[in-house]
Length: 257
Image 1 (cartoon, rainbow, N blue to C red):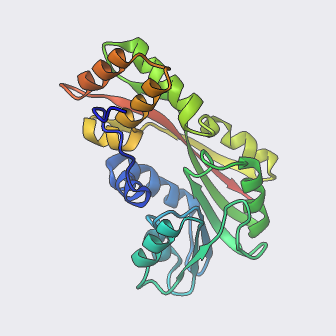
Image 2: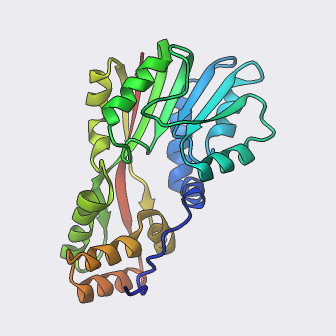
Image 3: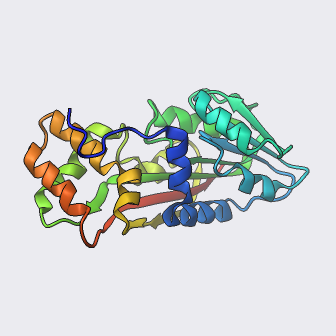
């Protein structure tokens, strides 16, 4: 297989940390934490916490009398999260699956799950778990992209459209979960309070390639005969030259228990 499109898959923990550190990542995460309206002394759950990107910010909000619980199932993520929060006594890292959260029923005041539902086997079951572990009156924040809205500017518009179709059909398990968040939250027994759509914009090709997997996923589409090799390679090369633009919609739903 050709490696001309930069197909090596990044280390997941490093990938998530870099994605969160970008302008788009910082903006929506700050908005999410603000909308959760965390108060000192509360218990906050970060379901699918990854490498612990958000745990320090959550710990700052709960103060010395609160608790932050980070749950993830991946050993590499757990190791990074523990390293990142080693000096934060209010943070507790737990190994577990979001389909079966290792959290006592009705013990959580605030909960967030951020870009996790698009990857899980059963989003409905995960939302049921969040309902189970949160207290009546708790506030829950859900954030997911809708990959049908991924746009990449290129002179070859047909190939850009084919790339988006491949991403939604073959790369991301629950690619349009973002648009369904409010409906699924309502069905899970939550009261939807706020729905916000933001549009992360990428103008740096290298950042977009890293975050959106432009070369990696294009090579996969070529290998699986969804996109012609010559067109796909030319599309990727053209993107790396001159002005670059890509964006997608990211949906945040704030609900209460």
